[in-house]
Length: 381
View 1 (spheres, rainbow, N blue to C red):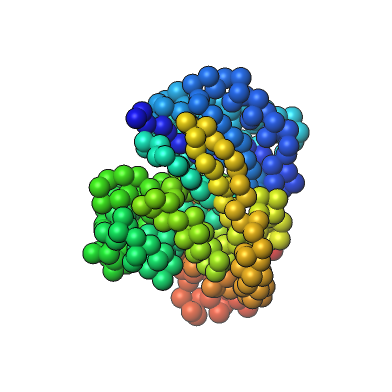
View 2: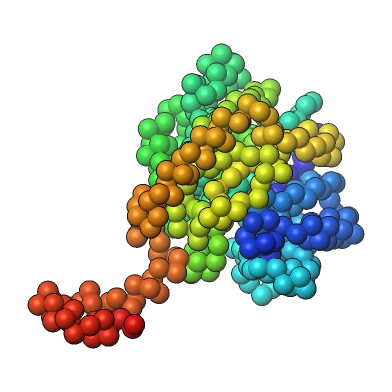
């Protein structure tokens, strides 16, 4: 059977209002452009989460295909024109380069892709988050594919009993290591327990079949400065030798803490919401995740089914809001605000430059300067 490719490519090309959502005219333009120019596609769908446009495409050209990435880039450029005409906030902000160079990776938009042979039944879940970073998937992907307390199939399903292979990316050094569960479970936890440094790039069976693929683009590292959060996506194939739909959704029943929220500089709960609720406004958040379910039939996308619209996730939403209330009380104090070493690519370094003269003084010099007033301390009034 011929293989199909599922490509999910997202970008923020203009927020409505502020960073909260995507204007309907941008969604319409993206759909029109893909349908008009996308003769290389088998099928496509366009969703939005927060201020991000999500292009969901099936085709038979494999991962990292130049024509598919060019199509996505051109779609986002076309949407940017609409955003600028509407004077939307941050128009084109995720398009960090001036021109396409053969692959959209490294240019700003997030990319998650996988190629596989379509099974007799091919249910797929696509998780899309806003106001957080790629490491946000670490804990859920550990629970889904390595934790029998979450995924009972690891114990009782002979097709999953051997475990899975994790491909883990060093976000800063760009090195990759492949580790197996359950054999290397402690080493896996050692790495992915630091989601700002390492993230799960993909998960495969021990026989090498792809089961999950994540976007791993870190925009701040690409740009060398803060240009918004990465707002990651992850694809997970389900059922028949892979974790069941319910097992894949289960980790999100308890919100975990992720980096992001306002100015990408805070810790916050990742709250599962329906697609209609994916409009973060409070402190530009809290971070949220939606789950779009599809049945893939001969490459066609049947869906989406809004998986987190279920009332069973109401408690998770309430718990997430309570955690958000508690953290917000801390304001600029850690652990709500990220540690200083994790704020390297925000606007904080610019502020710290103004304080360097004061930090470099001896205590007696500082005391003298303090008596003379803020100007002599190197800080403007």
